[in-house]
Image (tube, rainbow, N blue to C red):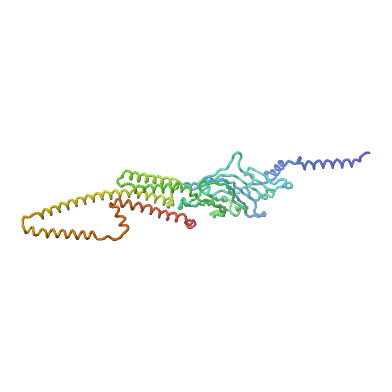
Amino acid sequence: MDIPRPSCALLILIVLCLTQLTECMNGGKINFREKEKQILDQILGPGRYDARIRPSGINGTDGPAIVNINLFVRSITTISDIKMEYSVQLTFREQWLDERLKFNNLGGRLKYLTLTEANRVWMPDLFFSNEKEGHFHNIIMPNVYIRIFPNGNVLYSIRISLTLSCPMNLKLYPLDKQTCSLRMASYGWTTDDLVFLWKEGDPVQVVKNLHLPRFTLEKFLTDYCNSKTNTGEYSCLKVDLLFKREFSYYLIQIYIPCCMLVIVSWVSFWLDQGAVPARVSLGVTTLLTMATQSSGINASLPPVSYTKAIDVWTGVCLTFVFGALLEFALVNYASRSDMHREMMKKTRREMETAASMDAASDLLDTDSNATFAMKPLVRDGIIDSKMRQCEVRMSPPRKNCCRLWMSKFPTRSKRIDVISRITFPLVFALFNLAYWSTYLFRDEDQEK
């Protein structure tokens, strides 16, 4: 039975349609990479897009272009007290709407287009206002991309390393907290043409395992810092990073060694006052070591016009060590004075003994009766005056515990050593109490 020609043609057409539909479902006929090229040539081709012209405002108005910013802090490598700067590596992202870049997403099959050349589209003229130096990362390929979404949204992402200035207030060093800022502003576009906004939700993200050598990142705050100049008002964003200095390092490296040096200088109070070489060498050694310690501390800090907390500590410790050395000089002087006084007393006793022997020889002289009669009177007067002096000297002393205790040490040099053994530790303990109560519990806001 012959098949009519129209029926054959219809059958062939149906078969071809089913074949094409099957191939389309299998993705055999559509090359999306080729479609991406066609779309890019269509929206970015010559005469179609001008990267020199900024996008229009919201809803196609002539208002300013809105750029949303967010950051991902990858690492913070160094925070320098001398240069007052810090180094940070971050992923920087910008997102804005450019309606000139809208395209057909092929029924949801094409989510976005990716570019690696930033000069193909308009870019915000953002710069970091407190940057000292910075560089991009180009290993293995440049760490940058631009994504263009079907509705015209543009996402720009780049990995950069920056060294930023961070003015520090070191009055409480090393018990201080520092706030370092990251400022971003428009260089040429005023707020009439370009406005930066923080991305809603989570504008700043920090890597979880962030480790700093001598600081702890306590928190960070985002804010706006628009600036007005003679040429107009410029949009500005900033993020403040609050760092707290780790005190354990300084406690081990500075405070405990200084305390040990001060205590070692007190050993000279327990040495014999005649051990001059030992006491001198101990005092000079501790003084030079303390001076070297102070110089090393100041070498790691910038020269500032105000007094830091560490300056107070090292200055007082140096004063205590120097005072221990001066104490030995005073003890040595008092020892020589005691020796001179003993010699004078010995000479006086010898003279008094000689005088009493002369008086006794005169009493035995019997040359004349008148003289013999007068001598006992003179002798009795001398004895009476001596007795009165003894009575005055033998009067009961006042009951004073300190004097009774100090009377156990007959020489002044020994008394100075004993007083120093008590006075130096007591004053140093009072200083520690005042120092730590002042700097540990001082209000940071009041200091700023």
